[in-house]
Image 1 (cartoon, rainbow, N blue to C red):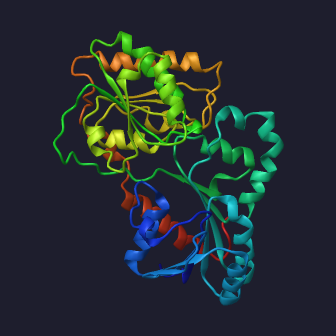
Image 2 (image 1 turned 45 degrees about the vertical axis):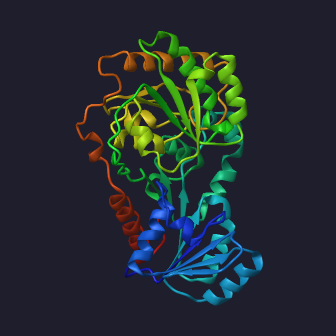
Length: 375
């Protein structure tokens, strides 16, 4: 990266070289691994860990006010610096660092917008939109993951023009069927068991579909969280507890995907990509842009969900989307050769992680080589 002498990353959480080395489908970890592999430029990752560590050209620095002032004094006058703010939470720290490093640029990286269409179009969001805009106004560029949430609508509502943000999918994962497993009568869900993931919707939909299926199926839930006991109680109340298995957390989801006839998605995005990569049919709600991203792919069935976004699904909406989801499950699983997605390689038209990272690094280079901040 010819135009970038250093990258300062502000991360509102705790991380370490060990965590970065197991990237999963997360863009920041993938980016750090690529920059570590290149060995340049120098990377300073300010985060909420308690210790300072060196990992090749990446220095992990505890982010406290005193440490930030120490770091700012160290960087006074530094040229060609890029400040990357992971989420908008630390935007004031980013603006402070830009003030001491002339000619630096700020990139805010969003993992998605999380809000749904209904909320973004509401008077409640209109009343707070200026707060959101303040957090992004200092950025020369905003990079958002295309995660099915209504990113374009959010940017429009907070007044960020299209030339000041980029929206990219994460790279499609490669998940080989290493054990050579075959499809079984399993409906799979991979999710954290927390309220904003809509796991009650998943269990209700499976329970509504089960009596209409030509064969018996098990719902296997891979993931853990504080809602597990409540969800187990819900399964018992719906009389499907014997057909619902909580498999716990796992980072090796390939065997589950390759041995399932259907992925029933909660409120999330990465698992959709994993299902497509393993030729596993998927039923999912539309978080806002899910249909636009995946709706044309074979055996990706997108159920209309007007509210969109993450968070608890309203009681008055639940019956309709459960009915629509159950119909989709029955339609897919009662077909001959249920759960066998056409292996036409459609997902290969999407980019890999190499493509995704190349776009981001090219953006960084362009930002730093331009005579003035992106407008």
